[in-house]
Length: 113
Length: 114
Image (cartoon, rainbow over all chains, first blue to last red; front, top):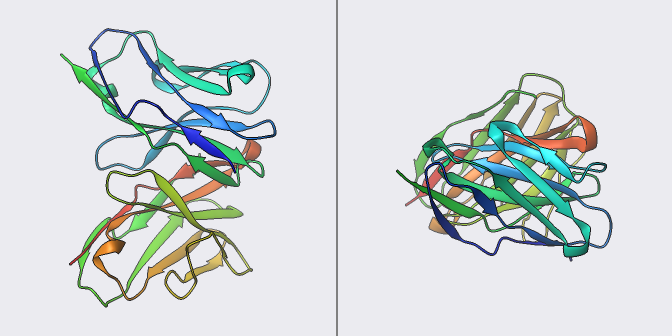
């Protein structure tokens, strides 16, 4: 069965520091991969997605992610975080196209001033 | 991407009652989805709702508990029936559009059952 693992439940970084959130998936075919962000009291906003092609994808708010097939990973990165990046981040894998999404457990990001 | 709204944004309900959540999209979409996010948890797909056909429910979710309507290409409702405190969650609708039917989410409905 398809599954998504986000090993880090909670991460704290200082404002201006770099960030990497980990995501590993289990899926037999070529996956559709997504990162969403959920700010407190809000719905989910799509940060970026990977379907095919260039394995380094750029998203909104200065985020990027790299698909590594050999490691079954799709880690999210940002070179310098801002206080407004504090939120919950969800990695998701889509099968049957993106018609069914399986979400990871989420990583809560806290920013220290 | 489509603009998605949900009503109500939040509600407090008594056990044994039912609540209907509305999801409105500003453009016509084929695929609509309903998710549940229990407190401190990730999202779980309840069902997929396509216009003109019965909703398709995921394992662990049944139509009697979560009836869904999809009367047209811009609107859907999810009813949470005979509620118990375990139904306290955020309920989110999403729509699929664009390449690969990427899913975009509404703001969610925060439900507390007492």
